[in-house]
Amino acid sequence: MHATGQRRVDRRLILVLCLITFLANAGNQPAPSLYPAVARDFGISTALVGQLSTVSNLSGIVLTLILAPLSDAFGRKRLITIGILLTLVAGIAAALSPSFGILLLVRIIGGASWGGIMPSVYSLAAERFSGTMRTIAIGWVTSTLSLGGIITNVLFTQIAQFTSWRGSVLVYVVWAAIGILALPRFLPTDPPLARLPRGMLRSLFGSGLLLPFRHRATRALITSNVARTLHWSAMGTYIALLFSDVYGVSIAMIGYLSLGTSVGYLVGVNIASRLTPRFGPQRINVWANALGFPILVLATGLLAPLPVMLAFTMCYHACMGAGYTTQQTLLLAVTPAGKGATGGVNSATVQAGGVFASIIGGVIIGTLGYRWLGPLLGWSGLLAAFLVWRAVGVNAARDVEIEGEGLIVTVAAQPETPTGATTPIAGK
Image 1: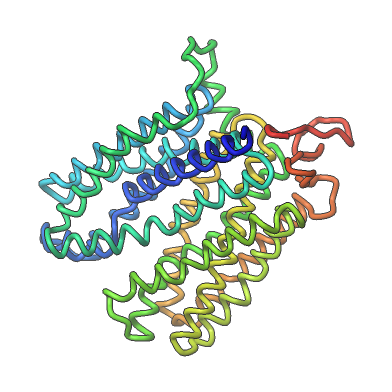
Image 2: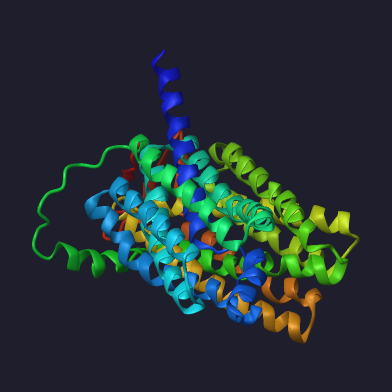
């Protein structure tokens, strides 16, 4: 009976974390399908409206580095609640924006909400679960992060057809209002606030943000995630244009095709969750990153008939889902303290990699065409696999290993520890 009750609590917490992730994603990234309507409303070019995404990403990078370490000091629930409140404020301000300049400023608030929410959500998933359940929880959060943007893009477009782009934003405001009232009450309670020791904040923003770079394993995992982002973000940014330019798919259908191919992401997360206890997260991560390269090369290089292209894309998404889920699992496992700061650094570097990937991808497509997108960017997946294999090591002494149903971190994840020692992670 106790085990059944615990499973019910676990599933409820995973559901709440996924709903919060959905709100954060919808509030941080403006739906690209609404850009033409925004351009007409303010009398500007669509290219200029595209700067909304740039502002969102850049503000998210900076503000994540500021807000994420605070969750280690003040509690995950408090930062998540503040983040949801900021999404509500950003939504209201966006819907009422009298000019495009004000709308750009509002996107900075969206970046702040992202920085307050996502590192705390991933930290809770790592702290409250262990073993297979940890991988499942992180996998579902990651899947929501991927699918949430596509779902909101399709949904907001449909709402805007009956109202306006401002009307679709107001629908999001209603979601955020419900979220701020309902979701935080289901999160684990934070410890009582106490007066911070002298120098605590300086330590958080100084040594706290540098902590992930002091360990070989965490350095490799963050770098590998950026390497993987180079091809994943480029593919995610330009897949809609590929469907439109090469296959002549209508704008209305592109959203549904993207949603369908992203089912592969859920499949990859599920496969990683089931295979991790048997093979370990390192092996799954290395395999997924390495397999993503030939699949991406085949998808963009062949430009096969649309059904075959969709199959390639689904397989590619499956590799990315398995790779990102195991990367997050490994990263949070080798971080015994300061998970918020580590998650913030990881999120910020990935967002920066995404901005760079979008620029490089546009240059490749503009000069060489879609066929060269996979061959020129897919190699970064091989680099990601190599970094995890060497630094986190499938057979090395610096592993994060599966032992029963819990994760342990061997000596390499902890600097200056006697050889052979192991440090148990929460839940072990």
